[in-house]
Image (tube, rainbow, N blue to C red; front, side, top):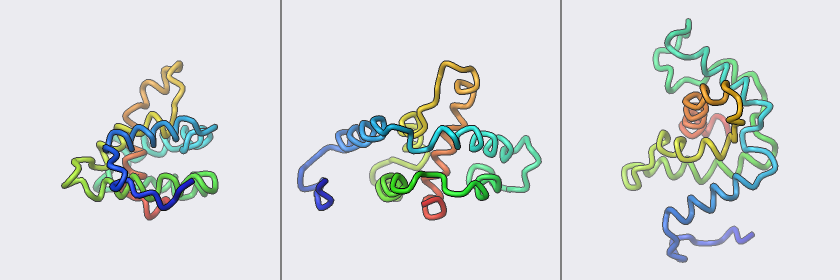
Length: 143
């Protein structure tokens, strides 16, 4: 792997880079957010929503306390793949229009790879997207 590759010098389009990242994530043996954590994350997210007894005044930007006690979310080494690129893109949203929400919409299916053959996965799609949005917004905490 060439860690010194300058994408600007190569004149790759944003779509090319995003496509390469999605391809890389989809080829991992397990999703970046492991299946073993997805149910717990969705449950924690559901409990933090306004209709629950949450004490968080801004639920969309809160990290559920249940998630904090889960331990490492990502297997060693995988977090470095997501930590630098995606949050850095969202920090430039005024130029590239890719907010954390837009990025989460693009990347959540690849990062979580839910099994859409179950009704639970189909009904949790908004939760999956919001969880990835929170990971991007709160990347210093999670990574």
